[in-house]
Image (cartoon, rainbow, N blue to C red):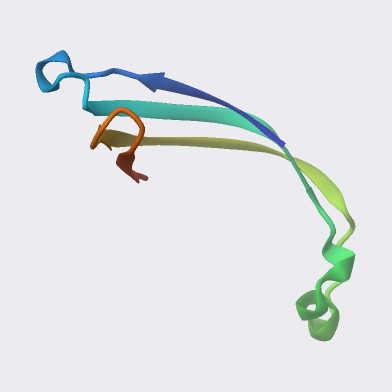
Length: 74
């Protein structure tokens, strides 16, 4: 479960068609390692655990019209 925030900065000189943005998020990840056949086959024993997770990224949307856009994100 991650909560995410996006900061979008539309470029007015493009008629707000080009919209760069930044993404930040944080939350928790609950792994169930006991179901992994790779670990079992390797003889590894790992307990189920909950971990903090964070993400960040940048990208842009390019609006072709008012309802359709393409994007690139990383």
